Amino acid sequence: MLVLLVGTLAFFIPHSFLVGLRELFRKKRKTEK
Amino acid sequence: MSKSRIKRFSITDRLFHIFLMLTFLIQTATGFSRLFITTGWGKKLSYVFGGYETALTIHTWVGVLMMVGFVVHTIYLLTKIRWENLGDSILGPDSLFPNLYDVKHLWQRSLWIFGLGAPPRLNRWAYWEKFDYWAVYWGLPLLAITGLMAMYPMVTSRILPGWSLNIAGFLHRAEAILAISYIFIVHFFIGHLRPTSFPMNEGMFSGSVELEEAMEEKPAWIERLKEEGKLELLETSPPSTWYRVVYYVFGYSVLIFGIYLLINGIVYSRHITLH
Image (cartoon, rainbow over all chains, first blue to last red; front, side, top):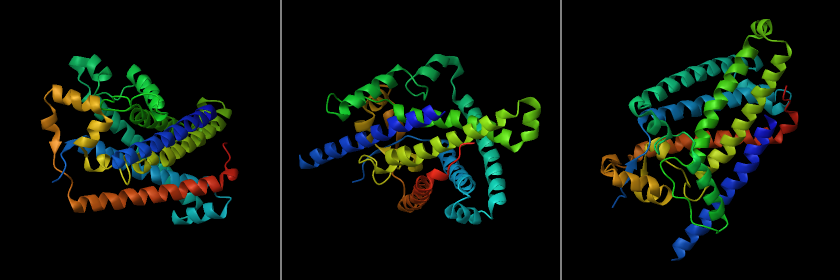
């Protein structure tokens, strides 16, 4: 259970944050165009 | 000119989500008021619910309500299955059942993050949405079974060895902490804070999404609807201003309260005991 807890958070927190960061740059590029 | 919108969630889907939002928040607050009772913050939180014992009573009955919700949702799911076309109903693109495309999409999205490929051509449900759904679906029975064991320790110890109660307590707390952390960090970020959703992904409240937005995030879904001639049938009008105000106030109140609980949970995390 602890492995599941740590594993889920260790994967999804950085994954979601990086997706957000990527979307931010894509949005910025679209606005510049 | 207003942008065209398409229906994404039925009224039943949205009611289940609101039910889950409210019950989950109450369970987190009452659960935390007991978990952190040795701290000043935990004591103050328990006063809101009438004290340590009353918080448990609320936690227990809202837990029972959640179990009822789970059963009702399962019955609802069974009514949605197209039994004459079972394979497509369970494994088709409208199903929330995980499939190999989810693994492929996860891999493609990971590459896209680092600029190493195109974004995945998602269908109706993205892999993270399926993960959210199934996390609740297996988490709720686990919390329910371990919660019932704690509610009836004498009955449990007549059937199972005494140490099973320790295991149940550990599983209940660990799963609750996992669910709370995931919902208040990952789900809130995806639903509210990531640039595509900010300030709020309104789909789950209004029931509809902008077509342009859907074409960008779920291109395979829109293409399929066009091919099947169903796109026009799903077109809908935008939500009224008053309704938007209501769900923004409601959604943000839940968000703020959830983050308040999460921050205090992290601050006082050294007081957490898992058994």
